[in-house]
Image (cartoon, rainbow, N blue to C red; front, side, top):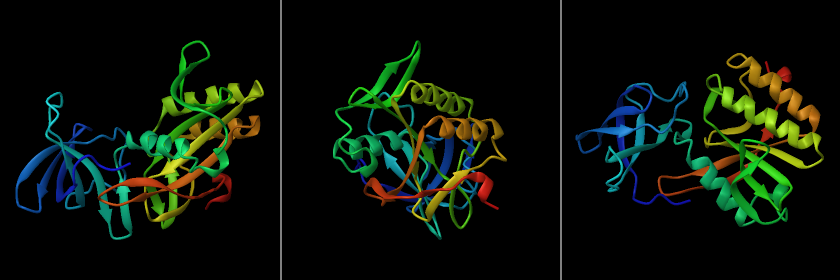
Amino acid sequence: MRFATPLVPGRLDRRYKRFLSDIVLDTGEEVTAHCPNPGSMLGLDAPGTRVWLERTDDPRKKLDWGWRLVELDSGLVTIDTGLANRVVGEALRTGAVPALAGAGTVRAEVKFGTASRVDFCLGGDTFVEVKSVTLSRQPGLAEFPDSVTRRGTTHLQELTEVARTGRRAVMLYLVQRTDCAAMTLAADIDSAYARAWQAARAAGVEMLCHRAAITPAAITLGPACTVLDPDTVK
């Protein structure tokens, strides 16, 4: 997935009202950018942090700028959670997810059950949900979630029901950081999600994880990452 326009660097002044951020570009210009991340962004929104913005000329958007990346000493982080599905969708359609290659035609946002949608359905009987992972509190280890996610818990429960019918159910975590090789659950942040995760895994839901390959020009699917049981992580 390539960015529509070249990203522009700057420094974060502040993030506020969850979806707004004031940023000083390297040119000295001060702009307000949309922050496309509803989570806590723990460790990613400190004033002075180096960031990368994308400019848009879309008249439907209220702001001319969108915040896309954070640049840390350890690497780049994608803070736009909405990009995860685009990256994974491209990878699924080109067979770049080895565990899911050959699973069949890829369809997005498919209805299933009584009132639910799954991120991707492959071949009619493989259901895939995608989550964007940006939190890291230990070097090399990513964690999900960074705040309580009732919606995420619901998704796990729905996948659990899919698995119990004998169909294939997959939770795919995209670590949108270049500095992590493994991920686990932040059970101290959302214990309900952790319990739902354990139940889902026991029911046969597959837990896959890949790291994103991130540059200021593009984001693509990178190598697989180890998924660690939170009970084994100190």
